[in-house]
Length: 408
Image (tube, rainbow, N blue to C red; front, side, top):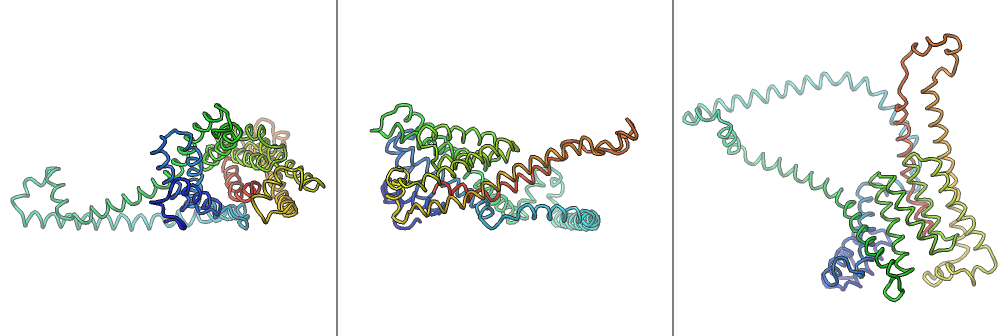
């Protein structure tokens, strides 16, 4: 039960406020609990697709996304300090290669043990059936029928079959829960997108439309892109995040940190899809925006003229311009490192492709002519996929920190 309020008796407004507080401190379980109740109450009062439900659907979807990440261990692996993923993967790959021979040598003894155990189990079952047939001669004639045999087995060991079924049911339910959190997050966010698109198209600031609705719509597209990233549908993630970026460019100043965050996320999605050039472009855009933002904050009129500074100052009494400048300067090296990584991945991929297509680099071809092509078997070009996937995974792990810090 979420703290500070009683979920069963709280109003939708109280539940939404509590849910947003839980989201702010990344307590996704409590956030999902109270926001689910808020969505239920609002939908019951106004209808499933009412304008009043959009924000609740958006925040509930974000809570479910965070909950799914927590359960799958993504957040834990992506925290700062876990940056040795490449080395771990390489060491793991070497260990796997070194253990292949040992695994192959151990297969036959294990197989023999398994066959021996199965033989003993079959023999024991045969003895049991024989004893049952001898003790119940009246049923021995009909026990050969499938139905009768099944009935005798069910009556003989009901507890074992029920326990096995229960164990399988628990496993299935656990796997379904893992899938359902991410799937439900997408459904709630897609419903929020539909409502907010309609509200934004209607315009009007009084009913929560216009710029306010478009800002929420941009957040919804970004969250949908993050769900697509978790689902490994990277092309879809890029499309959703591009939609977010287009809206943000219309709403915010060119040096707004939210635009920088979206560029960073699009760069991440492209890197996971092995679109290295696009990834570099968006990472560079994110870095350029932050550098521009730093120059703006260092100006003499930032405290009085900058709307974002006024907003942060009014919302957070601990906010200072110097603190934001320091935070942005700490983010820049991380983004520059991502840019260098993408350039290295691209160069390495090109090198691997060339080595695969021309492994002799012209030495054998100039000496032996056409016969050199058949001297040794050559791997197919697709053999470099394992390298790209490993690098893709490594680039995925540490991404949560810089992107989230941009938007704080």
